[in-house]
Length: 243
Length: 289
Image (tube, rainbow over all chains, first blue to last red; front, side, top):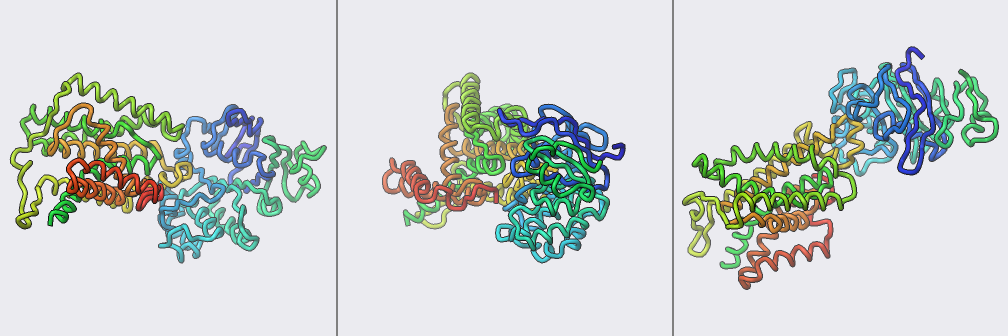
């Protein structure tokens, strides 16, 4: 726990009358890849939004490198080193591919990633450089979203449903990019419905069920059956696994 | 020849409408914000220019070197202190708050300057111009106004395309939450956008005051012309705003040529026709381009 780059303690998030998260606690250590798995509506994206500051926290704390993020606006969290690839990519339509990438480096945080490094890591983007974004395929948009997030030179990158709506072969290409994302020691927190993909790349995982952590562990140390039980909320699943 | 003259004069007036509309288009494009006090801010700027001109004994156009920076500051502070609270919430809050602000401005102007009509004295420039032929002449002041509109819109377009803050404007216009995830401080973007919006309103107000008389309650009419230019050109489209202003000006001039009473009516008809047949305007898609 001492190396935790991110700590979430007893987190409650409420939208109006609807409570999305109930006392969620987790930690992510520097250099790890941690996956959050869970069905649609389990609260995965809400958790990431609470970390980035887009969702308002009702109770509990989110700490980054040992300091609470409560007072930091979303743009200051990016400047502190937290970047996100949002669900649905959310590419800027009125900007070209190159401008989308450049705007990802708005905070001008120092680090190995710049426009040339991103283009070198993702040659696909180099080919699309001058293009408008409205004609891009799902895979091209996802690659662009990842390259754009790297421009912030993050220490922690949050990937929200990167496989959603993509063909299996494209999903593989996107997941093949994760070692590139991690190549400079960046920590990855991945939210995903595709359990197999999420566990294949994860050092550890948490399972969210109806706004609560229902299970956690290390992929190689937990049976598929227990993970399935936790994912669907079957009896006996509310426990901790590998750790 | 009289029709050609009408089109020419309408185009020149369209420059003024475009200037009134630029700030509305900018505020809507960047933050989906409708400022009903826009026309009143323009008229207030004309009054302030009048007072400063009398005090300093400067030409009102020279007074712009004071009024425009002041308008930038007022716009930024208005956004940060007041409008920030009503961006992104129920649009009825925007309508009530900015309409209320407009009423406050009108009444403050009334208290300070009374309801008497005023004008900005630019001396011989007001009526001077040059002849193209016996039937067509062009006034310097309308030409300067159109030139200002083209210059302002060109500057804004360059700013949007070439600068880091301009990219942030466009990203915020597309998706404010995604922009925040890029590390963009959208409140600063909104503040700067409103600063530009109020400054263009001030420029329009002062130029308007040099060619027409104004009174404390003239803001809403200027607002309507600005809105019509924005709607005709397309919401959020800066160059569409210029085209919209010119179309409105030409429509009014042609209407006035048919019958002096048809001028404004013709402009409103064109506006309504655009609303019916092309509700997004000629160039509008909702984002800043």
